[in-house]
Amino acid sequence: MSIAEAESGGSYIRIGENNSMDVPDFPYIAFIEGDGIGQDIWPATRYVIDRAVEKKYRGRRKIYWKEVLAGEKAYESTGEWLPEETLEHIKRCVVAIKGPLTTPVGGGIRSLNVTLRQTLDLYACVRPVRYYRGVPSPVKHPEKVNMIVFRENTEDVYAGIEWKEGSEGAKKIIGFLKKEAGCELPLDSGIGIKPISRRKTFRLVRKALRYAIENSRENLTLVHKGNIMKYTEGAFREWGYELARKEFANFIITEDDLHEKHQGKAPPGKIVVKDRIADAMFQQVLLRPDEYQVIATPNLNGDYLSDALAAQVGGLGMAPGANIGDQCALFEATHGTAPKYAGQNKVNPSSLILSGVMMLQYLGWKEAAEAIEKALEETVSEKIVTYDLARQIAGSQKVGTREFAEALVERL
Ligand code: NAP
Image 1 (cartoon, rainbow, N blue to C red):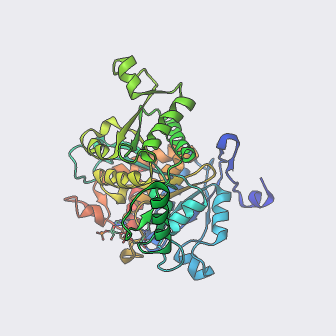
Image 2 (image 1 turned 90 degrees about the vertical axis):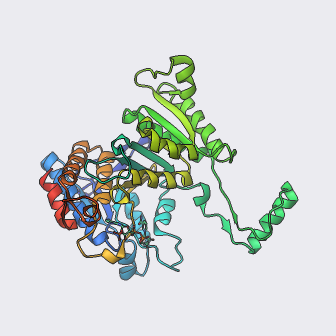
Image 3 (image 1 turned 60 degrees about the vertical axis):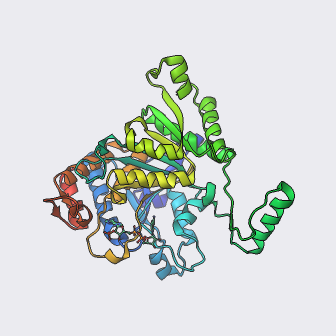
C-alpha cells in the first residue's frame, strides 16, 4: 500500500497473472455520476450499495469511491467530454460504475459510451436477465427467464467502418470489388464492413464459458447467423466450438455429443455447448426460455437479443449491464439520461442498483449482492415502486427515487 493509500484508508485492486483480480477489503472504485437523471439514480445507488456492504461486513469491508468526470459535468469543468485523466483513473481503479451519459451532438465523439468501451478494450458487454417478483411483464411465465448475454463489443458492424453513398471511399471500394472479385454493386450503395476475428471470438467465448463454470450453469449457446454470413457469423460458431473443445474439454460436451453419446442427458457438472441461428433464437427465448442460460454472440445479434429479453422481464428500467475487459470493468445502467426527468427525484434507480449488484458479484462480495437483490424484489413485490412501474401495477404505492432506495435499505 502506498503512503497516499494508507492515509486515505483505501487501496487499489490489482490484476495478477492470468488476469486474475486481487480485491482488497477497502478498494478504490471509480464512479461517473452521469448526465440527466444520473444526479437522481447515482446517489440512490451509492446509498444502497454502501448500506448493504456495511450491513453484511460490519466495517471489515468498505468501498472508497473516487469520482471521475465524463459527459456534461466534465465538459463544464474541463472543456472536454471525456478527459484523459478519467480514463487513467478508471484503468488504475480496475473497476468502475457509471450513470448514463449524453452523446454530445457534433462534439467530434461518436458516442462517449462507445469511446469508453473501445479505449479501455471492454470487449464483453454482459447483460444478465432475470425476473423479479412483482414486476409487470408482457409474457405468461417471465420467471422462466434467467439468462446472461455475453455480447462482443468491439467488432461486427459496430466496428464503425463505413462509407457514405457517393463518397470517394465508397466508389473506391465498389471499384475494387468489381476489379478484384467480380462483384457488381449498385453505384449508389453505402458500404459497411463487418469484421469478426478468431482472436476476439475466442476471448469473448472464453469469458462466457468461465462464467458458466464459476456459476455452475448447465449450458452455453452460440447465437449466430452463420447460414447466411458464413465467414463472419458462421466462423463465430466454428471458433466458439473450437475454443470450447480446446480449452475447456474437461468441462463441456457439445449438443451433438449429448444425443450421440449420452442419450440426451448431460453428465453431472458438464456444460452443454450448443448453437442457434439468431432468428430461431428469438422464438426460442419466448417459447422455451428455461432451456437457455448463458449466451455468447456477436455484436448486433446481442444488441437486439438483450433488449428483447429485458422486455420479457419488465423492460430496460430493470436491466443491469456491464462492459468487461481483461484489465478493467465498467458497470452501467442500460437506459439513457431521460433529460426531461432530471433532478425530479422521480425515475427508477433499479437498473443502476442492479448494475451495482453485478459489480459486487464481480468483486466477490456475494453476500452484499444477494442482500440487495432480495431486498429489491421484496420492495417491488410489496408494490412500492417508482412512477414507471406504478402506472402498470394496480394498487401500488408510487414513491420517488430516494424513497425507493430507502424502502429497499429498510428491507436489507
Ligand atoms: P432514455 O434516456 O433511456 O429515455 C427514454 C424513456 O425511457 C424515458 O422517457 C422514460 O420513459 C424511460 N426511462 C429511461 N430511464 C428510466 C428510468 N431510470 N426510470 C424510468 N423510466 C426510464 O432514452 P433517450 O431519450 O433515447 O436518450 C436520452 C439520452 O441518453 C441521449 O443523449 C442518448 O444518447 C443517451 N443514452 C445514453 C445511454 C448510456 O449512457 N448508456 C444509453 C442510451 C441513451 P417514459 O417517459 O415513457 O416514462
